[in-house]
Image (cartoon, rainbow, N blue to C red; front, side, top):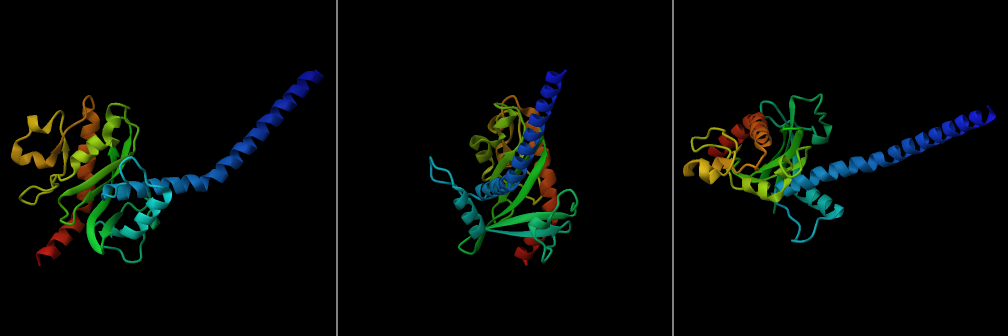
Length: 240
């Protein structure tokens, strides 16, 4: 009986000690984890805007922060496309502030080089998160990144690979008549399925991942529609 009591006491002390250590470690690492999440978002924002490390190299944490601070500006929009003065992107709680939209501006030599918006939506197995950058014309895709998802490795998981994301560059989100058509991920090859004069609105799909591609097609247009009032204002101002 004495041995059983000792064993139970020892097991309880080990369990309690391990719990305390794990809890302490989690608290100590929490700030670092949040920093890593923020840094990963910044890395994808600048990547969508065309900032790339030299071939064979990667940006350091310091490089990412410097490029972001030097070249990225932000604003918050309401659903009518108006900029809300005094509001910061970091103030937005996506779960609460559903009537607010973050937008990023990439600048080079004090000139606007791209608009950047966050995009997200359902793929096959997961919610996919990324950033879409548009040229100053607000029509031509400058770049796109997908930085978080749970799609099948080797299939839908290919959406974050350069060969897929680079296919969006130069594509047009509007028709010649000015209608928002977004970008469609086709099943197969664009050259084999789409008429030449319409190919600027389509990209090749990923083999065996039709549903992931459909998800990307759907949420890209949904996200662009949210920002339509803002870009309509920009286009009107440019025409005046």
